[in-house]
View 1 (cartoon, one colour):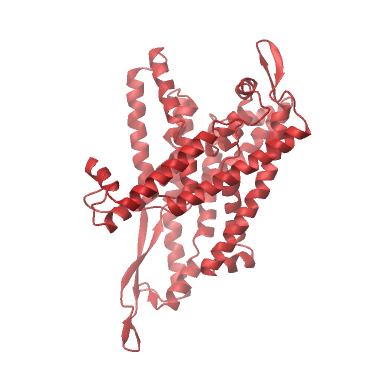
View 2 (cartoon, rainbow, N blue to C red):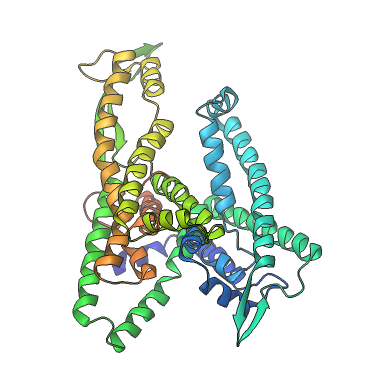
Length: 448
């Protein structure tokens, strides 16, 4: 393995791309330590710690993608989430609005137009979310050393405008960093920024577990059990990410002039988890709504009862969360993969599935297999999503530690790592070096 990593730096272009990527990641981490002007960091830390659990979960979901910058109120507090949200909205509009469907079929020109619209959408979403965060920070207060203090001592209209401009600029800068990494670095830039924001929490988690062992909160046996479970879950997530069903496709021979085209065999890869982490994100967003209402209606007896049902450790929450993930897995798969379009493209280019008639029958055949393949993938995704909550309840592990045992965090880290390694391996194989494995190749995943 050491020889493989030495080969990486023997290729000038690959070495330059990796160093460029690491440099921009360092810039991202540096910006994560620059606080917003006018915010009292000590009071903010106390206020975040005193938040109710339901609303803390809502903030935690956003803070996950922001790399912890939201809870620290830095210039990157919005993170890259506005861009992700704009991309999802554009993608969903492509399934229902003809104009966006037309852009998706126009090739490179259409892709550039969609990218431009996504950037405009990012700015609009950043403005709305930036204003919400400014209002949220202005209204926050906490008790420090027995005195009630505000997070923003001198808040006003000037603070609101300055905060919104700073947050929007930070998001646009992160979007630019991601595009530069994708174009001139290695891996998908946006995905890498999200992954780095998750991975930076790992040292804190390790130190926390060491502290638990030293204070006899956890035993050595519990720590080894957690490590074994983590390795098992990571292996399962890798299988879930890379698992696919291959449908054989044969192309008929065509004679054009003196040349013969076609006559080759290939396959259609149907992934077990075509939807990626999107079903978990959608399901979490919906289940956070009761927590938000419960925070603002804390004196209402009915809402307090509802909050108990939607607590992270309640079985009702697990069942509801799982059902929503299964539903959104099928929903997002139907948007991301269109069997009718695939069948039409195959028919235009003279392709067919052996034993299946081209056209409508081919679309029905692909849709039938996709439905069957997605079912175990949806159940596996639901299990991975609720596994951190199960670990928290059964082994009495802190959720910050348990979040690395499944859910959105682990899926993003594993998926982005596989995608980056696959690109590095492609550069090695192009230069006639061995890849990371002696036999076989890494199979990359769909980019976020």
